[in-house]
Length: 229
Image 1 (cartoon, rainbow, N blue to C red):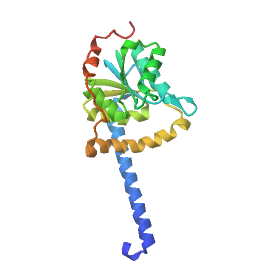
Image 2 (image 1 turned 180 degrees about the vertical axis):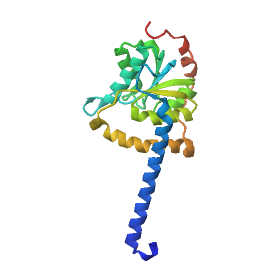
Image 3 (image 1 turned 135 degrees about the horizontal axis):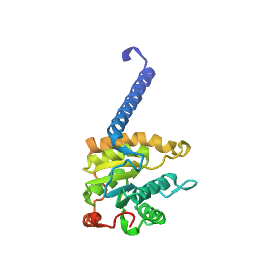
């Protein structure tokens, strides 16, 4: 059929076929992650299973118009988990690639401001992206189980990556951010889910930095003061 078409028409048809293939692959990848994660995601603090540690995934504390609603939602959700006794310790993992940008410290300060004891919070400064955060939680901080705290749209990818790296995780969702503020992030997440599958099954991507010496610290979590004391 292509031979009967002129060169311009052939190029248009090939471009269309390529775009259609990419769209189908993206749709299939997203469907797989959404389906696999559905039983592991909780929106009610009363229904989420108890775990010793909540892994809070980082984001910038500031957005274009002031406070970042994703940051506020995640820290509110983590504080709620701790106060109600569903976790006994919080591992906050975010990007601190330069001294002027420090997500973990901002999360700790926000949690302390919400009444969470500083000794119940451990900081991971090398959570440069979701894969790094969950892999380091398992390999560096020695966790086997955790409750991941992040936005609902982020949970499928986070849980997939966590389990791929040996961390048995469930997810507790922060409150939804209005669509008018979240639309760009939601669109970007579609591609990020495809990348997550490639990272695990094709590229075998590892965290940028594993580090040493942090494992023993979080293994002491089971002996920390219980929530509410």
